Length: 576
Image 1 (cartoon, helix red, strand yellow):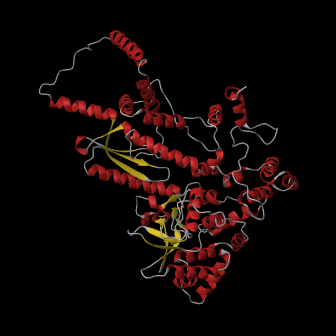
Image 2: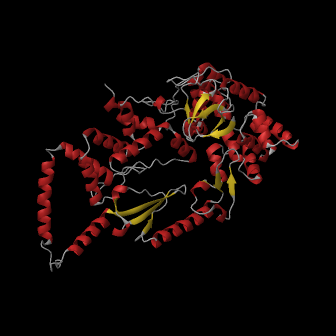
């Protein structure tokens, strides 16, 4: 048997698993523990035909619980696994692992004290891992708690600090830990936690060392490692960008030396839309387009010209092939007024004929919405967040993940197989517009309607009355798209509102009994009801009134813009 951490993507449930079923298992009893502490008991797995895939022999419920937590947080932690070897007895191994884990202390701080004592007695990390049925990274993660100030460790033992926050604090210097602890102990201040803490530690931008084009040893600044995992980050974002830009410049020079006519580096965050470009080989003047994400990731798109440049190149090529090129006329064939006369008559005829071809008109309209023109300018909703807490929440929500996947599907329909990001927001180029129109003419109605739906959804204005009208018309049930997350509770600070929400989930008697409590206490009770913890009856599928369609308020104070927007249009969509 070998103990190791294995990525969730490399695992699948074996058909021989005693709990194998097509239906997902009930994980409600172990999910809170996995959320708080992760998976502790290793899954029992065995190779599944390829070096990078394994099937789960025991641990199916732990696997599903870990996947659920990964979906909630937007990132998946590798799982501790015991890899079976030929001749291993599965039942004996599983029993042994559970027995070893049972010998562990119940909390990680107590485990740290035990492991530290064993280290002082001369035991190695590998010995400790074997004794307790853990992987070596798990032992190292517990030992990493030694880098924390004692008061932070004790707060973690009392569960006043969550695991994600502690994980980020292990990357902080002692001075940063002291500053954070001062905020944590100050009742008038709010210490950053979780994702916000990472931003606080790194000055607002955390950039992984994985995206660096330059050798890591060339970076003169501090690199902080996540002692609870395998990630490391550049502590100085400005210094990273200096080195990364130098590496991008060197890469550009290398492309030029290799014979490319030009290398264009787009601004950080600027998307590369393939329909604005035409694939062109190096020998015909193709360029290299370099894109850089806000997180520092660099991609090189080799062999492209803008549509306008490609047309010009084709025209020049045709001219070169002519034996006797025509001389340019001394004056244009049409005068300005005559050209205007021709344009207006042709325009009048074409638009009148278009009225008899609604299918063509639909495709032309979608092409205009995607690319734009001198008369059309459609922009994707920017989804500007008020702060980092809101930004993190919307980035991790289920609906955004589904929407991003639909965007990729539509980009594929439009011929941009390798693209990500918004479909709309083109530059209005004539050739790009005609290219998208030509592509849409080849698609069946169902696919055109898919593109149309995505374009409309992408350009739907946040916070508008039309969002309220649409949600109510569709009978949207937000319970399939939202659940209370840390950001929701972080932003809930009004005692009167918190009391009414407590009445929602726990009943008026509980709410009145806690109406004078601090908002922090009220929020803790609300969480207990939603999770079914601390003796509270679990409440499933709860929605705050602000999230439901139709929307309603908790107080009579006003100031709920969502309700005001619905009031504007309610009579149009509700039967009188």
